[in-house]
Each structure stands twice: as structure tokens, then as C-alpha cells.
Amino acid sequence: MRILLIGAGTVGEAIARLTAERDWCEQMVVADYDLDRATQVAEATKQPERFPPARIDASDQAAISDLAQQHRSELIMNAVDPQFVMPIFRGALDANTHYMDMATSLSRPDADHPFERPGVKLADEQFAMSDAWARSGKLALLGMGMDPGLTDVFAAYAKKHLFDEIDEVHVRDGGDLRIEGYDFAPVFSIWTTIEECLNPPVIWSDGDWHTTQPFSAAEMFPFPEGIGPVECVNVEHEEVVLVPRYIETKRVTFKYALGSDFIEKLKTIHALGMDRTDKVTVRGVEVAPRDVLAAITPDPARVGDRMVGRAIVGTWVIGRKDGKPREVFMYQMTDAAETWQRWGLQAVAWQTGFNPVLAMELLATGAWKGSGVLGPEPFDPDPYHELLDRYGIHHEMVEMEPGAHRPT
Image 1 (cartoon, rainbow, N blue to C red):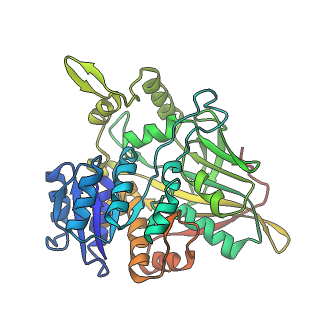
Image 2 (cartoon, helix red, strand yellow):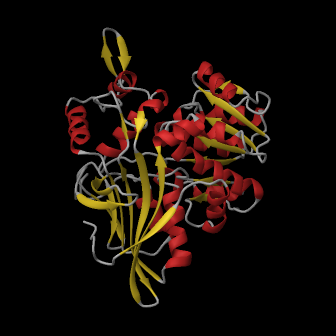
């Protein structure tokens, strides 16, 4: 498979370096706005002919299409901030290539009732182009990272193997991961962190999507691996808009263990207007406040050696099997120190990045096939689990006592 990777940041680097170990990849062009960064990542693969660097403006749809055609790319892998999803998505369609991302097109809150009903939901702009993608015969696979991504595959696995009826699907993201030496240091892109955490979270219930207040409905979720109960709160996330499209269920939520201190800092950022993406003029220079914030916070790509603890991301499914209540939590655990020692990669970058690499392998080998705009759920989860096992990637499932921990 010939791939155009757009984005050589923290996760893009992980994707390139992990792909370098796979023989199904004929070529992966490593493209970024910063050519020096693209070159650095390409050189890290130690395979310059398979991984040539290139400069690209991710907002330039025509340039994206041209670069893909120039290199005869069969798939465009989107590894940049979600603000650039649509030009890359459209550029891939123009180039007649397959497309994959780890985060979908952005939402826009309802103007009158932002905390009651959705306006434009995550991925709405992409699903609106489903017919065009279906006509092209090409696949646009949305949300194929860790969460969304593996969490959605877990939901599909539960549907296929573990339950006769599914009532609820809840994604829980937590653990004890931290970056030592900083008062404020997000473990992934601050741009994405703000987008997820300050937008109205979406919930699926009563056969439709609803919104609520950011950081609402705090609950203590009992994370495995000896971590124990950690407070999680509602955050906007793709699983809530993807899972109900393919799996019949009454309720879907996503909650993240942010911590009270981190939440207060995010609230302050919002109160000061530092989360704004519209540009303001400062001493004759136009700049977006969120870009300023991104420039002054620690770069997640450069603090992997200071990251300690474990990240656990999983899917909690509630339903029935053989007429009896059942609850399971399927999860992946990543240890930061272990990941840094083994791959020299930051934990969240590796945890996110290995998933599109697995999905690309399944597409390259024909184990997964499709056309149109799809999430991970319609695909057979078994080959995915087989690759997790083949490459020694941790994944586990715990049975939970039905009714012992109720989602709020």
C-alpha cells in the first residue's frame, strides 16, 4: 500500500515509525507544514526511499490532492489537528484515494440551546458526503485511533461475541498518567484538548443525541490494573456519534478522567477567551488565542521521557447474554515508562498511533474492505484482535458485577 501521511507531530511520528516495521507498506510520504519536522520523522524510520518527506499545507485541498496523485498514494492518513479534517477529506476524494483519520470533522454548538441539543455534530460534515464517497468506490474510515478507534472495535466485538442485547455503551478514559515537572502539560495536543473538553458533550439516549454541560455527571469509575476508582466527567467525543449508527443501544456516553485541577485550568482558559480560534490583532499581528496557547504549553512530542504512569482506555458494555444481565469492560493499558523504553515514543502517541497502523494493514491485506464513509464498527473485529495479539499489544476484558457501578 502507498500512503500519504499528513501530519508529522506526536502521533504522526508514531504512525511512521510503527509502519516502518511492516512489509505491507510500499511507501509512506511523510508530509507536514514544517518540512524540517517531516524530514526528522522520515529519517527516524531509517528508510529514506520508503518514507520520503514533503511539505504540505493541510488547509489546501488542491495541494493535498496533487501530492497524493504525484506519489500515486492509495490512502491518505490524516494525523493533524481536527480543524484540517475537511480539506484533507475532500482532497482525498478529489485524488480518488482511500482516507483515514483519528478524529472527525468538528462540531458547532446549537446557537440557542447549546447544552440541550446538538447543532452540527462531530462527523456530520463527513457523513453528509457519504454518497459521493460511495460513488467513488473508495473508503473514508473515520475515527480510527485509540478513542475513537479501538474503543469502537471493542463495541463491535461485544456485539458479535459477548451479548445478545446491548443496552448501554460507555467509553471511559483514565488511569494515573502524568507529566512530571509541569504545572500544566496536556498529554496530547492542547488544540484537541480544548476542542474536546470545552464543547458541549454529546450523549445518546432515548433514540437521539442530546448535549449537556462540559464536565457534567461526574462518576467514580473503577479502573482495572490496580488503579481503582477515578472520577470521570462528560466530554465531547466521536464514539457517541459513531456507535449508535451501527449498534442498537439505548445509551452511549464518553467520560474522561481529567482531574479537578486540570478542569479548573481549562475553565480559566475559556473564561479568558484563550480557547478562541478567531484571530485577534496584537501589535499589528493577527493571531488566534488558541494558537498562542499551543505555542506556550509543553509540546507533547518532546516530553515523553517525563511521562509516567498508565493510560487506560476502554469500552464498558451493559446488556444481556443468554437472558442474564452482563457487564464487561474491554480495555487497553499503556505504561508510559515501558513505552518510552521500548519504542522511544510518548505513551499517548504510541497508544493512539498503533491503531491506524493496524487498520491500514487490514485494508492492505484485504481483511477489511468497504466504500463510503464508515466508522470502525461495521468491520469484523476479529482480524483486528488477531493483530493485537500478533504484535503483543496489551488488551484485556474484565467482567463487572451487573448493577454495582451505575453510569450517571
